[in-house]
Length: 298
Picture 1 (cartoon, rainbow, N blue to C red):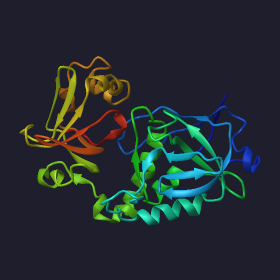
Picture 2: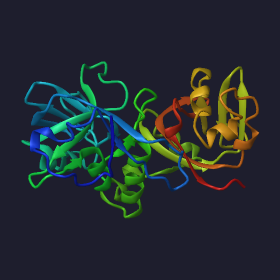
Picture 3: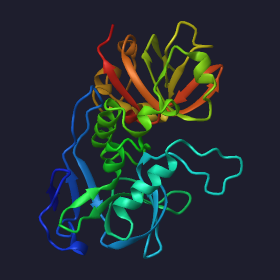
Picture 4: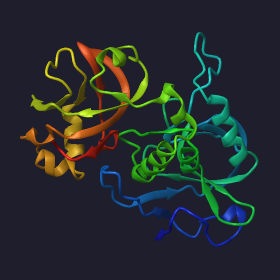
């Protein structure tokens, strides 16, 4: 059974029985901004209900039943949390306090759209916080709308990405929270020196694809004339087929059996991920939600 609802108030059916009538939660995704088209936002329900007992940081909390929950789909500013020589990211305390204000001491329902546990044994879930007056708040979406997190997805946990990306875009357009701080600024793909200074960090980069190539099944998006020095985005052969299943990638790649990628040249994109260095600055994309199309091709 599927329940299709918008991300907003639900009829009051009891604080701890929120959405328990359905086996899955389905939220229609918002389309816009030239991003990857997505199907419905389908989330499988966790039968158990618990209360939030502790907030660790802006994207991690602990439930009264002892489970530690990582808010999948977002990355909030990071606190040191005992890590030596780790510089706290700007607005990290504000993000933690925002989660506390929304969720601490309140009953929550967890919803799953992919992998359920990470390597740290944390539960990976979309979190819905019961309101006293009925209905719920989608915690990840609320953090994005306040400008206190960025969208952060994985190839095995992509559900509801477009809904989350739309919330991020809205906050960025208003320069809310992190979007008013240069630490989180979107970087120009042509600024090679600036990107090299940020190697090892999760970043958003925008630019025009100068050329695209498929070499032994691996996709290369080059953002300059010299691929040995300029910014490059790579997609491993194992992931190219995943890209080909979604539009507009299916059309640009010729389906899941990609052979001609020339249509990607001239496209303006925004890509997110961890910056690395291989010759010049490089970023690996494992799933299509990491790359948004931001304008028409030249």
